[in-house]
Image 1 (cartoon, one colour):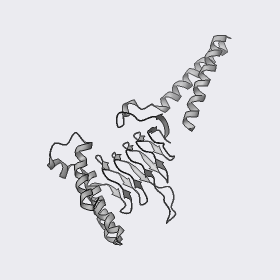
Image 2 (cartoon, helix red, strand yellow; image 1 turned 180 degrees about the vertical axis):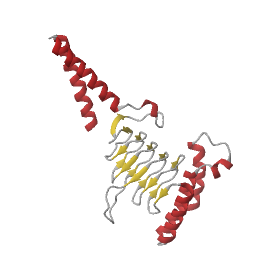
Image 3 (cartoon, helix red, strand yellow; image 1 turned 135 degrees about the vertical axis):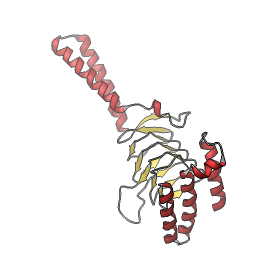
Image 4 (tube, helix red, strand yellow; image 1 turned 90 degrees about the vertical axis):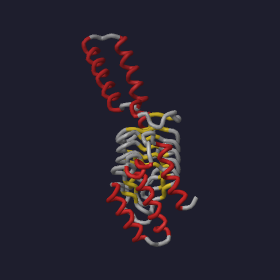
Length: 234
């Protein structure tokens, strides 16, 4: 697909991803993420033919207008949609495949300062990167993966999986019917805190009275905890 065909498809893509749009007027004045992608397409083309200084200038102008920072050397596929977009950062060696949805405040960044190496993530087709999340380093986010809001991802996420937390852990495998149901994501800290409260209550009960059934509850709870920790390591 040629440059102008990709840009045309970027505008059409808004209607596929945002039910809030009602007119072309809104498309031109209320979608900084779309304009950031359009400016990126032009800058990336110039960067590829050796006009790197011009490409960097265009993206600096884009950052001033949209508050979205995309390096012109990044690789962004077709039908990538940046929703709202304010505060999004995409690094130089990042690779974003087709049909990826990125929400506001996302950083697709690096953890290595070495020049000439791939330092940024690869986001596979169909992935959704939740608002405020940070995806860091030369890792792969699998096809149709979901990253929960405000997560910090420093390890690879398999295809069709959901990852949440700081650092992010895979909490669900298997493709969800919805894009990303933030209200249904598990609260890892809450679950661990509840475990600790229950464990303390059981231990206090054991100290006061020697009940076999309480010991059995403690052993069962310990198995649940071990399964929880194992899932965090996977």
